[in-house]
Image 1 (cartoon, helix red, strand yellow):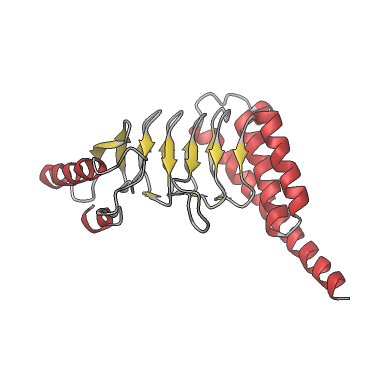
Image 2 (cartoon, helix red, strand yellow):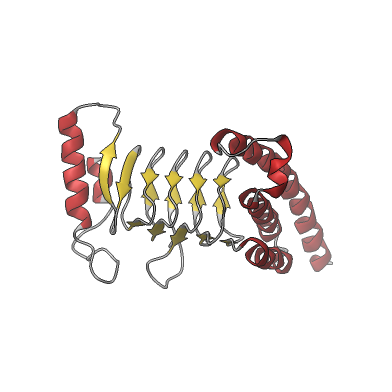
Length: 232
């Protein structure tokens, strides 16, 4: 009896999640039309690999949350085979995300991606350590992640930030900042206070701080990326 009740509870949750998927996909489509300049005709989403991969992720996430994990992982594997996109069903992507091209995209299980964000091919939202708990990035709203960018660890990428192609990001990125390179360094920041002096101080601190990254791609113990939140 208890098993039956548990199954019915999961089934009800699944229907709710699938209803949310329908709404999320509508927002994804609107974002795609707005943020992908190659979108020319109304039916183009049918042939847009990134959009189709995102749709499969949303289905797998719905089944995962509702505790139908075998089906969730089956859809997840199908996504990898059809579109070479690896988004763990446990990851959370807000409605209104755009995946452009998609091929080679990897998003880990504890990742979060905000609405309005564009992820190009080859992007990785990965971990620094083999550990449990939160180990993948939190990406804010309206972020651009360039092709091949690697964002590693439980760090935060602020709203409106831009990550250059093939950059390796290892510490928190402030809102509206642009970072590039290996490891990524700040080259631009649009601040609410437009003082050039303030920006210069922020960039110097960020770029000096990133130099503390060791050969193991992890921050040295003497530094903590949370310090950035106090300054930028």
